[in-house]
Image (cartoon, rainbow, N blue to C red):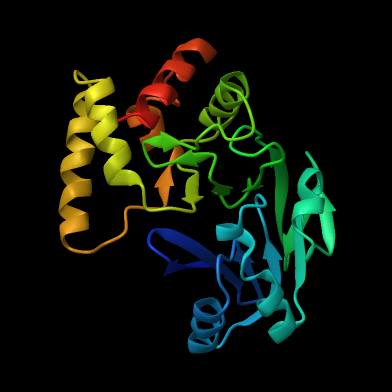
Length: 241
């Protein structure tokens, strides 16, 4: 049976992801900002939380770790480079390491820039990517602890994944990202068409993620940046937009 991924919206614009493998009974929580909505969502579905996967140390991605672990005894995995900032970790991982849910495997990708040790979890066979705050729908993360060169390398790497890779990012930023994209690349018809869909979805109160690599390749100005300098210009302009 295929994996099931459920969205748990929390705070003002965060998405926590629950991934369940019916065959093994395992459930992974990705980047829990808070605990109670996650525990309730799992309970409603009859799922038992067995793991947490963290992509980076920011509190809106790790704030629920301790309480979820206390309630479930789950195993918490996160980036080795940020272990000092995530004291709840049971296992630290680096580039190329594997994590599993049942018989399904994910490979750790190091994607620094938003934070110095940011990682992603790529499930190649399932075409699933949990990317945290590195890649957003029509956007990328702010460069808090890294460089435009690092983010450009991330974009090149992620952009090479198959078009149908489902990208589970951690925030509902699509509308604001899209407005900037329209200003930055006004001749891009794909962006205009996508924004019409996004605006309509948001009016209905519907989420706009997950996205796909193919959709981002067509409409994400950061993924389409010519080089690191161009990405730096775009990021500075977005920060001031």
